[in-house]
Length: 176
Image (cartoon, rainbow, N blue to C red; front, side):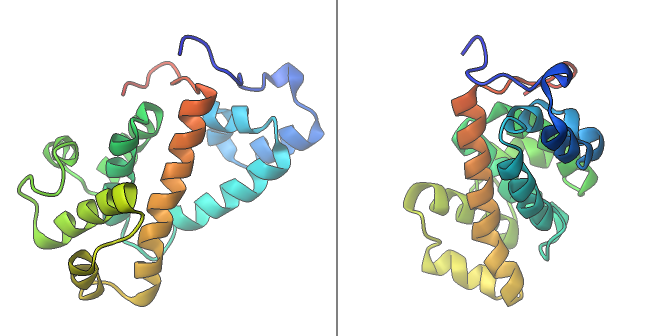
């Protein structure tokens, strides 16, 4: 795609509702994903609140970011990948681990990391976490964390769907 199908909402185009919801997101409110969705302020408000719950949820940040990066990679969502690279690094993923996310669960991961990557793959391919993968996850996570695993993967599939369908472009300074 060479130009966005739905362009970001420029500051001069923003009404009170769009400005309010974008301002509520702080500096992130100027990211193209949010300024594009600001064309539907009510939806953006609800969706960003939901996403915020997941970003501060019960799963350890490192584990959440493994799920997000694998989902972004599987969906071909370069924007999502690029924006989560620094978040993943802050969450404790080493650059070599981030590179291995692309290779998948059989790329020399420990049992739990491999199960997380496998869960993302299984959800992507079969819309269900297989019994063996579930057993590994269930042996390591509390119930709320287990609930979050498919919700995180599903949320970032949604993100990939809208990014790719709308043609949301990476901001200058970001690279996929």
